[in-house]
Image 1 (cartoon, one colour):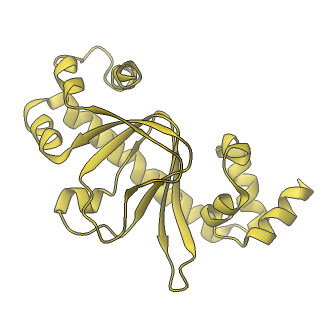
Image 2 (image 1 turned 180 degrees about the horizontal axis):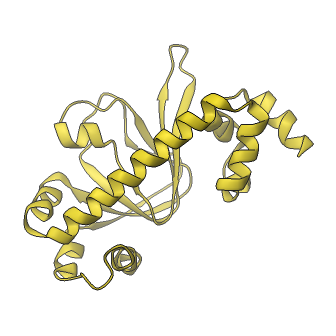
Image 3 (image 1 turned 90 degrees about the vertical axis):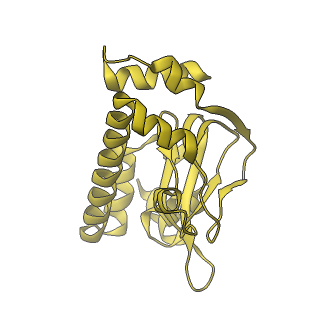
Length: 189
């Protein structure tokens, strides 16, 4: 499984892979069954995860305890509650496994050590942050302007694998629409 992370880092860094083996030694293989929390709102997030296999949901609860999904994260992607991880403050989001997952986790101490000693790791981290921020802003700005039907079409174009991989309830939460509306529109497409 560590080879998946090795390939991911090489793809991001090209030939600039000095210290790669040292970086990989800081990651721990974690296998988690479906529907388990990695982070709960109110707890401190202690790890950053690279998803080798599986799918994670990043979400909050609204005032009626309904889930509002910020992201659905799949293989080859990083996931954490970064504000909590960085500050040591309680998390404001939850991270839960949607499928059985194979993850590579790095704790804060290892992460900080790599940030200070391995310039390439810092470069990868900045790329991850920039990509995450750009995706979040794009999704928010796009969703503000789109109807429910257009949001479904957007998902079918940008992340079609999610349509068959995760539940309609989860997709509706991610798209910010009612589950019944999602089902009705999906049937028309």
